[in-house]
Image (cartoon, rainbow over all chains, first blue to last red):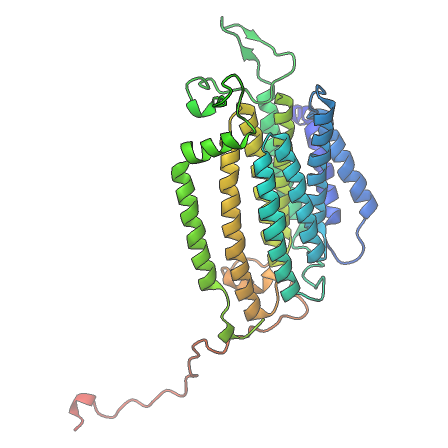
Length: 260
Length: 144
C-alpha cells in the first residue's frame, strides 16, 4: 500500500486519463466534454511535471511541447470522434505532429517521407474508402463504442506499466569506476548500455567530408546506413512490398462480383 | 539531450496506448486500421529518439522500414475491408463476431438492425438437400 502511495504522481494522471478517455468515447446521449477535457489536460500537465525536460533550450522545449502535446491531444480526439471522416483528418494531424517530433530528432528526410506517405497517400486512401462505403456520416456502430470502460482501463494499465518501467530506470545510481555508487544529481532516465563501446552500430558515425562532425541528420548518413549496414533488409523490404502488391490485387473485390 | 529522450519515450508510449484503446473500442473497420497506424507512430517516435540518443542513423533506417510495412498493411487492409463491406454492406466489425468460438461470452447485446449477409452471385452455391433416398432393396452388385 505504501508503494502505491509513493507512486501517486504516476498513478493520479493515469486515473485522470482513464476518466477523460472513458468520458470522451462515443456513447448514446451526451458526452461530458468539459469535464473530460479538464481531466485530460490536468493529467497531461501532471505528467509533464514528472517528466519535464530540462529547460536548456527554450525553443526546442517549446517545439517539443507543441508537437508532442498536439500529437497526444489530436490522437485522443481521433479515437473519440464519432464521424469517421473527421477521425481520419485528426489522424492526419497526429501524423503531422509526429513529423514535427521527427524533425526535433534530427530526421528531416524521414519527416518529409512520412508526410508524403502517410498524410499524402494513406490518409487519402482511407478517406476514399470511407466516402465510398459510408456516405451518410456517423452510423449506429460509430455512435457507440465497444466496452469503453474495460478498454480504457486495460490501455492505461499498459501505459502505467511502461511509465513505471521508464521511471525505474531513472532511479538507478551510477556505479563509478572505483565501484562506489554515486547518486546522480538528476536521475538519468535511460542509462547507456555498458557495452556501447564495443557495439559498432551504436557509435556516432563521422561525416565523410568533415570527419570532426557527426553525420546525424544528414541525408548522406541515412543513405550510408540504409544501403550499407542494412542493405539486405532493404532488399527484403522491397520483396515485402512486391508481395503485398500482388496480395492486394488478388484480394481486391472483382468487378464481376458487383460494385460496392 | 537525455531529457529530450525521456519525454519522447513518454509521448511514444502515450501514442501507442491511445492507438491500442482505439483499436479495442472502435467498431468501424477503417478506424481500427487507423488506430493501428497510430500505434506504429508511437513506435516510430521511440525509434528516432533512440537514434538521436545514440548519435547515428539506425533509428531513422528502422523507421523507414516501419513506414514500408505500414504502407503494405494499409493496402492489404483496405482490400480486405472492401471485400468484407461487399458481403455485409456495413463496416461494423461486430457483424463478423460469429467467426469466433461459439461458446465464448458475447460482451455486447445484438444491435437494432443486423444486415443479413449477401453473398456475391458467383460464389458456389450448393443445391439444398432433398429427402433421403430410399435404400435399394437389393445390393448394387446383384443388379443386372
